[in-house]
Image (cartoon, rainbow, N blue to C red; front, side, top):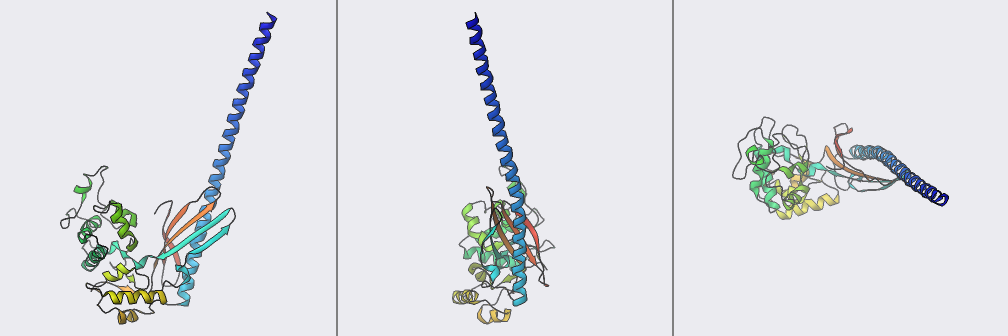
Length: 310
């Protein structure tokens, strides 16, 4: 009898020890997770502050460029990839590019809702230059304009998009970002989007038509400026870009033989720049995308900012 009691007591003690061990392990694991989550939250907050600091650095580079020269070109410090910047707990990586070296999708439709024919023809030439169907310009116009009348053979309004799965409607407003183009009929194909994306942008429009900076424009965008571009002259412009760019629009016209299409604006300065910055802090690496606007006084401010995706 006593032997049985001792056996029961021993088993009970072992069960208590086992339960205590499980509870202790669970508490230790929960403590680890709580500490890890707290550290992650702190690292993310710290990283976001560093990324805002990257905006300040980008603004400094742009202000310095505007004080030293009266044009923006690819040989200036702002156009160089910023070397990794060591910070407490990690590093910051950043690069900046001129978004006015690209075709502005929002130029396609004017504020009054009418199609900007000069920009429309330019976009068609750009699509052809990239070996894409120029008729793809029509669903892009339809995405922006206010009506529900499909334009051309490939046009698409709500009637098209409501048949998709999942269903949605046309934007009926200007593009907020280039990635929005993935929603437009004809551009859901990743290959089509990847082909056009490096040459287009989504900027606010001024006087219904934001200009192209010929010092930073990509070769396809340069070709789209004229109905019949001369390849030799486009190559010459690219050489000038690498050598420091044009100091004035008249210098550009001296080389660019074909006249720029009526209704299109070109310049050698820019107002909109795209900053991509990543902060590697601890186990977190958030990325920030920021559209910077520089006014005529040289002041720089972010007009669009997102973390994680464009």
